[in-house]
Image (cartoon, rainbow, N blue to C red; front, side, top):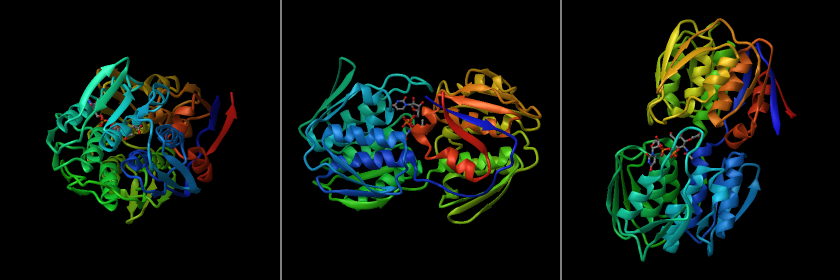
Length: 418
Ligand code: EPU
C-alpha cells in the first residue's frame, strides 16, 4: 500500500491546472447506458473511481475505451447484464448511478445496496421512491435492489431532502420515460446541470437543471454526443486551501470559480487574497489565517466535500471556529488524525469547535475517506517536520495526480511503498 511522505513548512507557489470533475464524470459515464450510439467524454480525470465506473459499465456490456489522456469513448450498443455487483458497489457508492439508466433502457436492473460508509449511513431510499413514482416495481432481495418495469411514465417527484446522485439517477431514467416528469427540491449542484447538458445534447428535453425544479419531457430514444466535463470544484477548493494554509500564492487554471463561491467567501473572510477570472483563480495566503465559522449545505452553500480541508486550515488559524456538518451524519473522521498532529478540536454531534494553534507537528496519520485524506495532506503541508499519510488509496479514488500537482507548486511530497 502506498503512503505519502510530506515534509511541511514550504509556502506553495506557481500555477496548476484543474482536472475534470470526478462527481460530474461518473454520472456522465453512466448515461452511456441510455443509448446504443457512442458517447465521447472529454476532460475526464484519471482516477480510481473513473476506472471503477468503467469496469462496471463493461460488466453491464458497454465498451469503454480511452481515446487520449483525458477522453473516453463509451458505447452500450446492446447491454446484456443489467447488474451492479456487490464487489463494485462496495468500493464505489456512485455505482448506484447505473440503476436509473438500466431500468429506463432495459426495463430491469439489479444493483447491490450500498450500505453504510465512512461518512455515514447514506441510504438510497429517495432514488427508489422516485423510480417507483415513475412506475418501476422495486424489490429488495439478498442485499440487492431489483427494479422492473414495462415502461416508465413521467410523474411529479418531490424530494424531502436534496440528493445529488438521486436527482441524477431520476433525471436519466425520466429522460426515456413516457410523458413529463417534474423533480421538486432537486439538487442544484453544477454536476447535475452538467449531466443535463450532456443528456440534452443526446436529444433529451430537460429544463431547469441547476435549480430546485427540473422538468424532463421524456423522449423515445437518445443518440450519441460529445461532451466536455466541467472542472472539479472540490479539487480547485483543495488547491486553494493548500495556498492559504502554507501562506503561498497559487494560480489554478481551467477552473470555474463561480462553482465554489461559498468556499471562496470563507477563504477571503479568513484572510486570503483572491483574484478570479472566468477560468482562473489566484489565492494568496495570509501569513496566518483567521478563524471563520462554516456550515455545510447543499449547493450553492459551502460543500460538505470541502469541510475536512477547511478544518485543516482552521486548525492553524488564529481564534476559534465552529464547523457544522449539516449534510452527512458522521463526517469528522479526520478529527482524530488532526489531533495527532497537535490540533485542538472538540466535537459534539455534528459540530466541531476548532481552537486554532500556532503550528502543527508532522506525525504518522491514516486516511479514512477521500476528503479526510485531502485534509491530512493539507495539514501536513503546513506542519513542522515529516508526516506520513497511509491508506492513500482513498485519495487516489478522487484526486488526479494530487501529489504531482503539489510538487509542481514546491511541496516536498513523495509517494513510497509501505
Ligand atoms: N440521502 C438520503 N436518502 C437518499 C439519498 C440521500 O437520506 O436516498 C441523504 C444522505 O444520507 C445525505 C444527504 O441525503 O445525508 C445528501 O446525500 P446525497 O444523496 O446528495 O449524496 P450522494 O449523491 O450520495 C454526492 C457526491 C458526494 C457528496 C454528496 C453531497 C457523487 C458521486 N458523490 O453523493 O461526494 O459528498 O453528493 O454533496 O456525486 C466525494 O466526492 O467525496 C463525495 C462523497
